[in-house]
Length: 268
Image 1 (cartoon, rainbow, N blue to C red):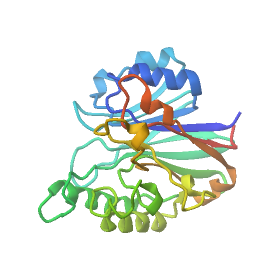
Image 2: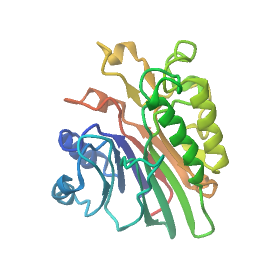
Image 3: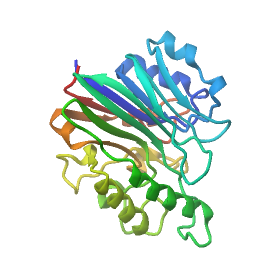
Image 4: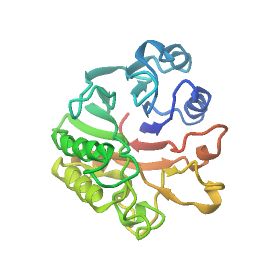
């Protein structure tokens, strides 16, 4: 069986645990990375995950906001819970997991959304987002013959023209402004990361992982954005099989506005 990693901004893990359970029962990824868990560590639903066969759990949470968690069916080792921009927000967690004879360093990120006004001079949230992405330059795709790196998460930026429903209409909308997309792609390239969701996929093919709650009929309007990402070190691209965007999850009962992305590798 391929080794699989799912990433999902769940928008409150306790509120949407039934949806998480459905994903784990139907797709059974080896590892699940959650963002925006909105849950302090002492209230994380560890028992529910263990009941589902996910015995290995790491979390970096806080009350009511942000938060990331990584759960797995195989052992994981917590490596780091990095602080960015001198702020104690829970937005990063890295673990090490073994698959196919390789030690994989797996980064789980929740990048700040950035507010509504794309001007760092008047919007401190947007300034924070730009600074956060700049600090992500320190996260490198380390690898050698027996190791590799994977980075997943809600990175809150749709970098390419066809990662949004309308490139022209979103150029001044936070998540797709030129300052964000240019810095984001420069950071990815400088770190040696490969964008697996665009690996072998035509650049003119639309890819979305998020649909706004504001849309009266999200499926009919289909005004999506690719805010969730899967990257890897170059030595894992030959082992990358495919990925699935679970679009139907946007229509589940009381859904997140993001949907799961599941990446599969030729690793056991």
